[in-house]
Structure formats: structure tokens, C-alpha cells
Amino acid sequence: MCLFCKIINKEIPSEVVLENENFLAFHDINPKAPVHVLAIPKIHVDSFNEVDPELMSSMTKFIQELAKEMNIDKDGYRVITNVGNNGAQEVKHLHFHIVGGAKLKWGHFSDSNPKANI
Ligand code: AMP
Image (cartoon, rainbow, N blue to C red; front, side, top):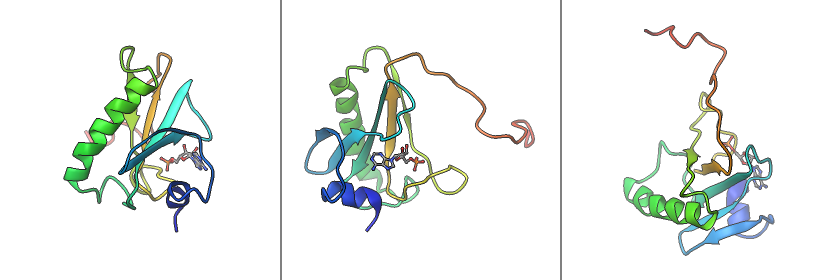
């Protein structure tokens, strides 16, 4: 069973901030900003690459609700999902990072030349 399935099953503790029948949101253990929570579906999906667009529809609503719950909806925030090896996805269970609570930076994503393919 994957790490986040264990969190869903409460086999591993987490700091839950929002939950419904289909989704769970909890604080990232290694926050990168004053607000950094993870939103996950309760069914196991490896990544965004495999997700059913219908599930994404209700997940979008959940993330919007989560942003309100964390009080970052008015000032703005970032929604990130890492996919696979090049996306630097560590946990192979679909998750969205919801990051905010301060003005975020936008930097280089890789050491490769960003214009190499132009
Ligand atoms: P990613 O690199 O997109 O797969 O992100 C995985 C995220 O899960 C990282 O930001 C980790 O800090 C976070 N993480 C790993 N283990 C836990 C845990 N037990 N509870 C909360 N967050 C975790």
C-alpha cells in the first residue's frame, strides 16, 4: 500500500485540514511556504496522467473549498501536481500541492537550457 493510502487509512498520522467522502487534505510534512497542504483522492490513482477527468471535476471543487478553508482564496495561491520522473514526483499517489500564505517566487525548474527546444 502506498504512503498516502496509509494516511487515508489512518495507519500513518497526518494533520487533516479538510475531508469528505472522496478527498482528503492535510499539511505537507516539509512545507515550502506558510501554507502548504496536499489534496488527494481517497481512491488510489498513480498521478495526474491516469486520473479520470470526472474525478478531476469534483477534485477541483474540493481544492477551491480547501483554499477557502485555509483562507488563501482571496490573496492567491498555487496548485501544483508533479507527474512521474521528470516531474520529480516522489509519492506515486495523485496529489496537489496547494501553496500560499505569502507572495510566491517563480524560478528555474531545471538546470537545462530552457530555450534548448526553441
Ligand atoms: P511530490 O514530490 O510531488 O511527490 O511530493 C510529495 C510530498 O509529500 C512532499 O512535499 C513531502 O514533503 C510530502 N510528504 C511525504 N511524506 C509525508 C507525510 N507523511 N505527511 C505529509 N506530507 C508528506
